[in-house]
Amino acid sequence: MKHIATWIRECDEAHFERVFREFPEARLWNARAGSVPWEEVTGLLLTGGADISAGFLRQPIPDPSLIKNSDPARDAWEFESVFRALRRRLPLLAICNGFQVLNVALGGTLHLDVPNHNHPESKSANIQELRHIPGALFQFPRVNSSHHQALARPGAGLIPEAWCAADDVIEQARLAGYPFGLGVQYHPERDPLYQPIFAAFVGQVASLGN
Image (cartoon, rainbow, N blue to C red; front, side):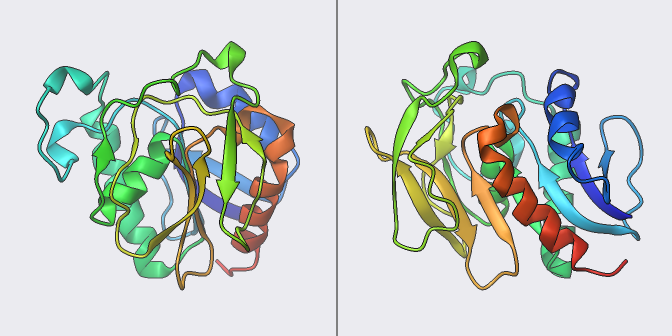
């Protein structure tokens, strides 16, 4: 059994349960619900959630009202988990707010209010058309983008691979020179179309010994 550390909101649990039913060799440890056995962990999954708390951001915040429903306890766990994973070079998959956490942990900044991306989940299938760099790890032509913040300046080593064709918002990036480090601004857990992302991630997790 391979062990993946994560923090998943209650409202997202059903999505990730569906995704990981295909991978019985992997177990998710949800830090929201209990402690994570880090001595056994061989991967980190950062999922969607509320905005990063102001105290963790590395930039001026001209309008504090743009930071919505932040969870400092979750932020503290996720930032420490990113540093743990990077030190051990564990496979890392970062989704939506998790992508933003990864970027900030690497020294990057955020756009604090992005228009036309915060669509309700019920309307989120295949919303934004993307453009990609040649050789991008995944090249979905359209994605289910649902967020109101996004990457501004990429953090150290984070290489953008895909942008929203309409406004150049970064929708996908990878960690250069890292075994498996992928961040996506969209929500692959909400549609089986994106299952190859999780297959690649779990494949890398499974390649590591406990």
